[in-house]
Every structure is written in C-alpha cells, then in structure tokens.
Image (cartoon, rainbow, N blue to C red; front, side, top):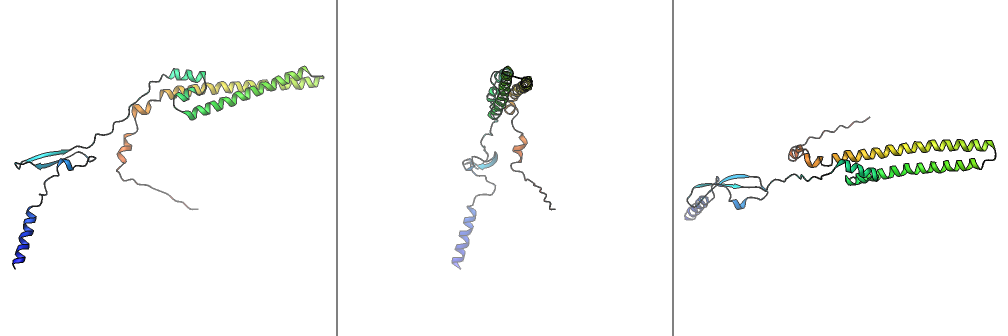
Length: 199
C-alpha cells in the first residue's frame, strides 16, 4: 500500500514539471532554413514575450547584363564570318557559318578552275567541234560560278542578320528572367496523363 502511494506521488510530480503545451521553443532552437515564424515565450517575470525566427534571405535574381551594340556585332560578322556568333556566345552557330561559307567558297573556286580549263582547251582546239565543246563548257561553268557566288552572298548576309538579331536579345533572359510560375510548382502535386494504344 505504501509503495503504491509513493509511485502515484512520483508520477504526479513528473506531470507537474512538464513544459506547457502553449510555450514555444527558444530562438536558438529554430532551424536556419525554416520559414519565418512567430512564437511566445516567458521571461523571468512570467510575462509572455513574442519570439520571431527568421529564415535565410531569398535568392536574388541575377540581373547581370552585357552592354552589346548590335551594329558592331553585325560588323564583326561582315568582316569575318562567324565572329558575331562567337561574340554572342553561340559557338555552334559560328561553326555552322564557317563550314557553310567555306563549302560555298570551295564550289566557287572549283567552277572557276573548270572555267579556266575550258578556256585553255579553246586555245588548244584543232577543230571547230573541239572549240565549240570547250566554249560550251566555259559558259556552263561560268554560270555555275555566278550561282555559287550569289548563294555565298546570301549566306553571308543571313549570318550577319542572325548576329544582329541575337545581339538584340542577348540580355533578354537577364532582364526578364525565367518564368516565375516554375518556382511555384516545386511543392505542388503533378498529374501526368499517359495514353497507350495497341493496334
């Protein structure tokens, strides 16, 4: 009987020393990465004092911009094909520009060589048939050479315009940034729908 009374008194004393449910943890126990919250604690006089836990400051959007003059970028592409694309930090486009204009230039000089060969054959022709055949080859290769020159000029102007337009939009992402709606869906529930068809 005495042992039972002692155990009941010990349990009651333990319940009396527990922390009240409406008390908040001290400021030092807050997690550094937790969101801003407000709680209540008691000072030495027993007065309720509000306690605020502050989270880390939010990340600031990168607004670093490059001061680029589109006309000067286009001038670079006019002087050296692909230079404007390199300045716009698009090396893949620069490689395509150099490869494309290099191929067109190769075709121009190839047709020029064949045209000169036809002219030489005209000078060495012994019959009228040989002369007429050489003259027809000269005209054919000359026309092809002109066509390739036009194609090269069009490609060169196109890559200049591409460098000019890209220079205008080089600061587009830095000024406007990514869509803010992307950051709002990190904790949201996503629904994925798939359709399977068998025939």
